[in-house]
Image 1 (cartoon, chains in turn cyan, yellow):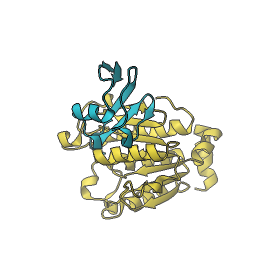
Image 2: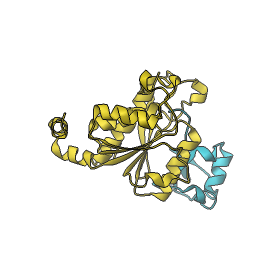
Image 3: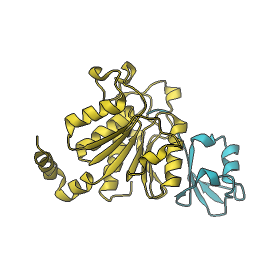
Length: 64
Length: 208
């Protein structure tokens, strides 16, 4: 299982990019923390989620 | 007011050690709208030694409802207007201005600062700044903001920490495109979370 924003999900094996796309995230508006580090955008396609991974996805909204 | 008088007044309240740390710190404020104008003034009041201010825009009448500018500053670049306001509060804060739109191409402009405050209004620009600074400058602290529009309760504005050096303030969801507008108090709550986080980082308090 992979913990994403506090919820356990059965998504191991998927890449970060495919998880974001399948769950309606706009990749241009997100920042992703994987196991305590900010994952560079260039690594979204090549990073597969593994059992036990912890992910936080922040989707920025406008206003400031 | 001499430099000595200013620093003595700060030291009486904050203690000499924290005043020294603050005066040696360098903070970038990226965007000088509702968030950035409030962040910059809070940091100047607290005694941050050097502020780097970034914005491409000019003060407009539509800014006065939530940003720190005055009628007398309409039409000025926000960088120049904020430098003027800071000089009237803390003339011993060293203010460096860049009247530019920050992009991936020119983000090296923030490279001299220890802490980078993301104070943009556009969601894609926010994500660009956070991701680019985190990737290129992994030793910098980033204090960002997301979700402070509308007249929702103030109690949902919080500070979260991601990774070791990224902090995100706001409620995470109220988008100005849904709420149509922003109001000064809620934006200032979020800006105050950002400024407070910056001061805590400088003081060596890294948890939220």
